[in-house]
Image (cartoon, rainbow, N blue to C red; front, side):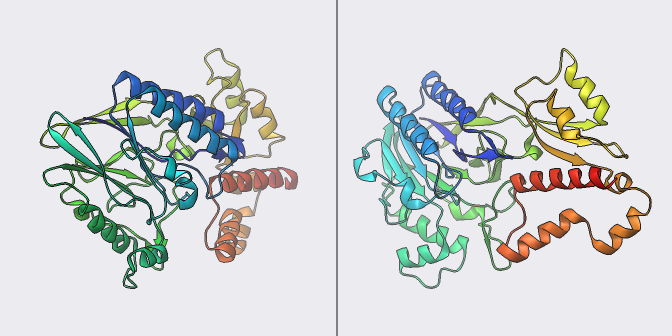
Length: 383
């Protein structure tokens, strides 16, 4: 049996106010092509289908059209779950119209806890879909006030799911969680409770032939070769620039996972970080072998003096400069700035601390870009 493991599509996402929806539509075409080319039996989407609880209608339409295309034009079954970015009820909209023989999409815990059971030449394969859920939702669903963490909630889901696995069937679990030891990127929203990020142990998945995880944006194993994050299908932060994004093609045999093949994805507008002095970056952007008009750029300037309209100069050769960072802030502010900064704090940290105090979290990737750009403009005016 061939499984295409994907996750963290974040349909409708913006990066520094730049819409990524057209890029995501092209990535969906690549996913569809992979399903056809590799004769995929099951498509898994392990959460964070959308980027927010109330997604843009264009994002919802894109998702629905894609699923309809997969269902109508291929023989692949579909397994999908809500992630921590999704509103569970929106993910399960129209669930009554799903074909129970080929489709298992779970948002709220109350929806269809039984497995999707398929067969191949080696016997049955049971697919369990375990959506991300908040602590209080899990307490209500399982009538258990003792659920006090992400690990407790997932443990209750796994115990329920095991009841629906036929004897002798290979078990494939889809979940959205932070498994111990996972490596994060700057754009992932922590699954946090009081005291820090909540993680779950990989041993919790004992008995599963394969565990298709979502939430972390880098492809990686999580405690065992058969417990995997496929990673996000595109970069959502510049710490992911130049990182190859892939789909995980998982092949099951009678014993379990026979092999995992990473299928590369081509981002329509790759993320790039360019570093250097303003004049050098502008000259490089005019060269015949420059990054091209399509790349989404973060520019890191090393100049020490005042700069006039740095963002405007860069955008003349890099149309999609989304972030601007000054490495030598103190030098750019002039003599004595170092002593002043000791007294009044780093302004970026000051803004981050304010946001954390007001709303409980610091700036996200989009807001960080806006703060950097605003501070750079202020520094230029002051000098």
